[in-house]
Amino acid sequence: MARNKHPEETVQLILDVAFRLFMEKGYEHTSIQDIIDNLGGLSKGAIYHHFKSKEDILVAVTDRMTEESNRMLAAIRDRSDLNGREKLKTIFKESICRPVQNDIFTVAPDFHNNPKLLFSLLHDTIENVAPNYILPIIRQGISDGSIETEYPGELSELILLAANVWMNPMIFDSSEEESRRKFIVFGQMLQGFGLDIVDGEMLERLQELTAIYQKSK
Amino acid sequence: MARNKHPEETVQLILDVAFRLFMEKGYEHTSIQDIIDNLGGLSKGAIYHHFKSKEDILVAVTDRMTEESNRMLAAIRDRSDLNGREKLKTIFKESICRPVQNDIFTVAPDFHNNPKLLFSLLHDTIENVAPNYILPIIRQGISDGSIETEYPGELSELILLAANVWMNPMIFDSSEEESRRKFIVFGQMLQGFGLDIVDGEMLERLQELTAIYQKSK
DNA sequence: TTACATTATCATACTGTCGGTCGGTATGTC
DNA sequence: GACATACCGACCGACAGTATGATAATGTAA
Image 1: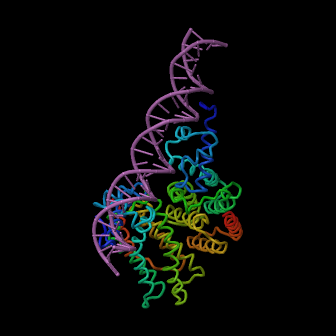
Image 2 (image 1 turned 90 degrees about the vertical axis):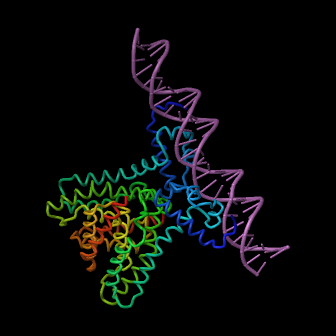
Image 3 (image 1 turned 45 degrees about the vertical axis):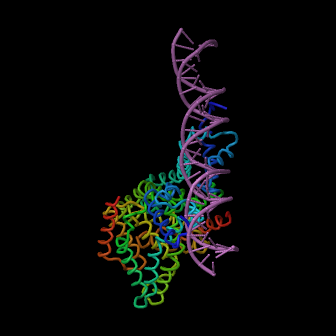
């Protein structure tokens, strides 16, 4: 085979396979040969034609993972019918409802075998999500009076770290009970910053999620 | 050479060299051969006699890193002249004053090149430090009336994550100004949980530390 | 104390696997 | 036909880990 007419499909195929294998076996324990074997006919030359290194594949995979989430965040950030605090609350709601729609749990990342993946998501959270999505919302909340803080940047980071990392059952194992307790403490923390944006509905939804994730393991 | 009379010195030498190289070049970019080359005469046989794998060396290195810190935590935890809240405050003070005495900054870990190291420290924080040191202290604080919470375990984790990870300049780059702002927000979070344990002296000390770390890079 | 067996501490040569390269080929476009 | 793109697959150096052997420390029995 040579000169496919739709190389973009080849790229997507490579990313599909790599994504699945990275999740199943971890980045480090997935070899290029593993990917080739699951590619159906394609060869090492194809991979290194489209990607310059194995690390480059990981970057592309994580980019594709966060893309959808980022679109959601941008959409909420740019709405004009909500004040800052309402936007924050909407984001939490959406974040908790979204995952089941796509396949995040059917191929749940095993972060215990994926320090590199965890690190890049951690990095993305602080270097991208916090300043580009949460910070503008908190700033808006300050000017529209719905949020009160002198440290919007730091607040963005702390909230995201707690929500995305600490409360993430894929990073730190949690039973349903632990998940519930974390959520409550998280809510207390937000209240300490004058943010009353968690409710019982969100807690229920979160526990459903945790249960689903527990079973998928 | 064969049958050294003091094999423990060999183990320590291997750990010394591995520690330094892991910090300088990162775990993944340090090869066993690199370690051998810096060992002064010793060979691969020596390494694989004392350690069963490269990963095993990393575990030993991180264990040695956290050992001193854990001794400090245990000492404070087991004091009988302080209530729970005072113990927490003492821990923060000690944590901020300690690092310069030893060489933590002269061979500052570059976590950006060390996802594995970061992950194992993160894991240690949640699986070991939180339940074995902070949790008992918070429990004591609850019974002696100096701390008030229904969720001691979750509070331990959240506080440690914020202090050890978020505020750690080795993990998330911070200027002195950012470091100051993070510390204040951290203090606000603690106050939200009824814990009034940070003061201006600690802030000054933290900024000194950040400055030292900035210069060492 | 001596003689000797045992075993812990290494050294060296080697293996299999890995990520990545490179010359080449086939197929498309202009 | 000139050139770029998409891909093939043999090959390479580096790597973690192993197999085996050498020797010095140690245990043991007389």
